[in-house]
Length: 540
Ligand code: SF4
Image (cartoon, rainbow, N blue to C red; front, side):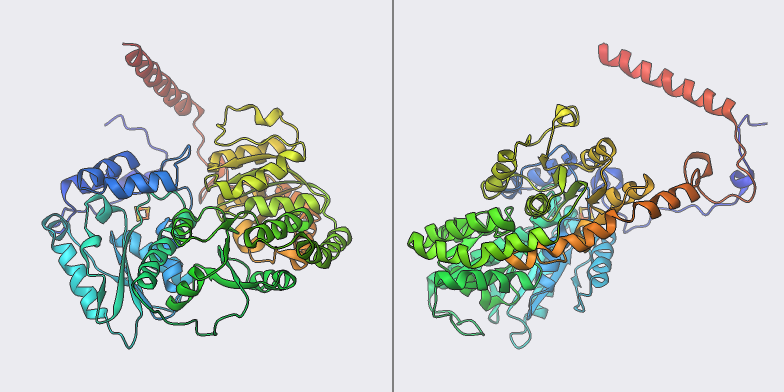
């Protein structure tokens, strides 16, 4: 009699026990201490000790951390990986733990990468002896074929960054193929959106130095005879075209979209008259444009007010006369107003996401008639998002940055905008507001559906629609109104599944769960005792 209390016979099942192999990670790099589900502080301390302080300080300034110190969405490196995979004639090589690389390649192919992802594996020995760096260098030399590639991007994931694998020591180019090495650790880059900026900034930096050194390739599509506006941020494919049409009356043209699709577009992007920071979090990319002497215009031509203001700001950046700006405004604003009026949205909405376009979408929803009670962005606030925040405040709404869950926003009337919002913030807002529609990330939507609330994925269903100018004005109404109208179906589903999948009814059981409230009470006593002991220790 062991005294062990069991629910069923599962405890008697034979289990296979693992044993440590020679290639196990080095003691300081294994276990819970190293990974995105573990303490970021240990990883960061290791990286600093390994000489990566400069890069981590830069990331801390570019991408200030929020209430959470580790990624709450997918691995941040997915952002930079995707930027590289979408460029033609660019090879990508990852250096990191096999499980991280497995996840990243899986998601890449899930999203239709159709390209190989290079991987340089390591073990404890190659990591601590510096052989991993030599392996990366060999891999890059082997891959550097100028007939196939313009550039090779090598990315250090968490463990190689924490170990200080020095990608900066890789050659700048091999056989004419550019080598771009970046560190994208989950403990320095908080979201995958900001990781896109890490690679976009590194590539722009490289291209800017090439331009300074001498002539570079012209754009494949030829050079525009009008001054161009480079567009910063990934958008729905029709949006750059719509922006181009709105720039025409100003005598301007839309330039390339950064992140670019091929290397020579980087030169054209730097050769612009001004940069439109459609997504406001591209700090490193904007640093390169500023170094190239290009002015930066924040916000975007979204909705009536947003388009009017944006056209004016673009006109100011190019020093255009007020009449020209007014002509462009008159050409588009009535159409936008008309589209908004014919496709109204009625209902209360909470909105959260990690794309960086959350405030723009909120503006569009409000102009369509919706009541937006909460906007949470996983990205940090930046000077380029100020105009959108100001607009929301001017609507009589309460706006707070970096608010904590204890803040009194729940009592505030109107919109709450939250930068670097955590998943807990987003869920708490949704639970408190009980909106007619919750727009959010996967876990928020999952929770919303459990609560019987109509819910839409921000990335798949909102980001995949035009937002700019007249084309964007009515584009959200159909999907949003259809979702709000689905409340009856959500109620029926909630009623049907009532009591299933929660607490004792979670999991697969052959019979009825063997409930033992006495065990539960006994266990709760133990927990309470431990909590009291921990508190007493704190007081000492
Ligand atoms: S590389 Fe990505 S998946 Fe791997 S530990 Fe870091 S954040 Fe997590």
